[in-house]
Length: 293
Ligand code: SF4
Ligand code: SF4
Image 1 (cartoon, rainbow, N blue to C red):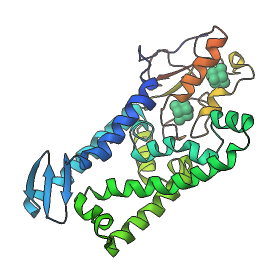
Image 2 (image 1 turned 90 degrees about the vertical axis):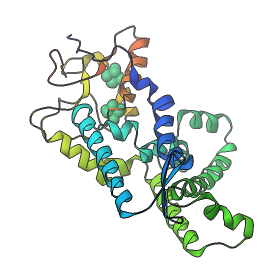
Image 3 (image 1 turned 45 degrees about the vertical axis):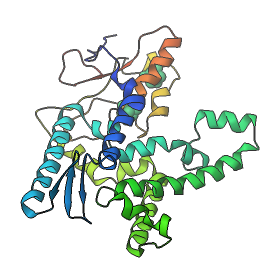
Image 4 (image 1 turned 180 degrees about the vertical axis):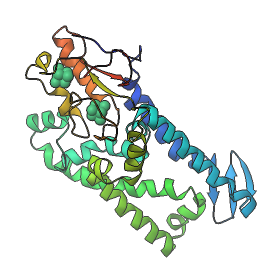
C-alpha cells in the first residue's frame, strides 16, 4: 500500500471547528459591530477603525475594490485549495454547522450522537429539546439581523424601538424578511450549500475547470477494492455533503462538492486508530508525486 504525500505535518483541519470557525464568524459580524469597517447610511459616512469619511462617490468608489479584492483572494485560494472557503470561512456554512443540533431535534437531519443518547436515556426530554430548537431556529436569525443591519445602520436606530416602543415599520419589515430567510437557511442546512448556493457553485466551477491545475482533494491510501476499510463507512457517514472521499480521483471539470473540511480524515483517524493502523485519508494535490486514490 502506497501512502500518499501528506502536505501538512500538522493536522490543521482539527482547528477548523474550534479556532477557524469562531475567527471567521467574528471577522464577518464583529467587524461591523465594533465599528472596524462599515457604512452608516443614516449619517452617510464610511466608518473604519474609529474614523469617519463622508459617503461621497469619491470615497465610496473604493468599497467595490475591497469587495473585488476579497473575491479574487477567495478565487485564488479555491484554485489551489479547492472549495475551502465554503468549508472553513463561509458565515452561512458556519451557521449551518453550528445549528446541526437544531435540525437534528426537528427531524431535518440525523440527530447528533449526544441527542440520540440523551433521548434514549431520558425520553421525556425529547419534546422539550424540540420546543427549544423551534424557538432557537427563530431567535437566532432574528438576533443576527441586528448584527447584519449594523453594517449599514447605527445601534441607536436599531435599538430605539425597545426604548421608545415606536418601531420603524421599514426596519421591522426588513428584519422580518431577513429572519424568514435565516429560518429557511437553518432548515435547509447543507442542502443549500451543496446544490443551491450560487457563490459556492461559481467558485467550484471556476476552479475545477482549470486544465492546468487540479485543486487539493482527499487522497485515499487504500487499494481499489477498499479492502483496508472492511465494513467501515465512517468517512461517508460524517461527510456533510454526502460524498465518498474514497471515490476515484477528480478529473478536470468534475466537481463532487467536497469542501475539504477534513471531517472524513478525522473519522478515519478514529477508526484506524482503534485498529492500530495508519489513517487512510489525507489531503493532497492529484498532480503531486505519490498521490494515489
Ligand atoms: S469528503 Fe471529506 S473533506 Fe470533503 S466534504 Fe466530505 S468530509 Fe469534508
Ligand atoms: S473512515 Fe477510513 S477505514 Fe472507514 S471507510 Fe473511510 S477510509 Fe475506510
